[in-house]
Length: 248
Image 1 (cartoon, rainbow, N blue to C red):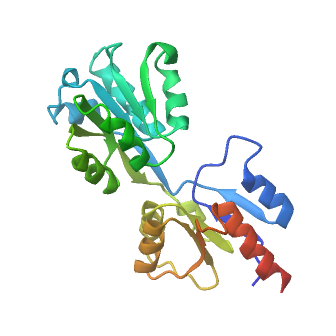
Image 2 (image 1 turned 180 degrees about the vertical axis):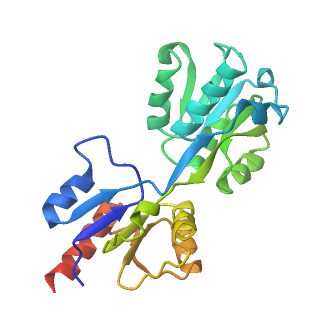
């Protein structure tokens, strides 16, 4: 069956140069965006209940923009003045760049990984005497605590935000040729919103091994998967699939 409509379970890109828009024009398919999950900040009262004293830390590990936003939100709500000497370990350049929203970049000690968390641990290892705080969501990749424990550094996890299923009830009678997922939480949202969901002729596109696993365990057939050596991005995987099926 040909592909004419695609629903991506993420917010619409803010930049006009997104490869999704190029894909839509090139393959003449309609691409809609809708986040299946969203992030909510954990109230400061709950965070205080964890009895973690922010004064005890000399470094912060930031794995996402959400981690940046919610650390500074909680710091403000707790009236904690972040010391100028605080060190920031950012998982990627994008996270480090986003940090400028809250601190004067050139006046702070900021260490930037290349992209993955294991890459960042190489920098953390060089500063083993620091006391690290990890602002986290309620759904933390198991890899992160495993890697930190391997280093033998002093670190504390503090959940500051949680992943919540979005209300998709308005999509109940809307059908797409392809549904695109990037996390197990997205798969979870699909079935929480539509417990009786049947795949039928809908193609499922998934990014990452954990998402493939979640989809398969939920009884879905994964028609499009990424990344791979040939298709490192989801848009490339979609493009390849659409070319093949729309030719028939």
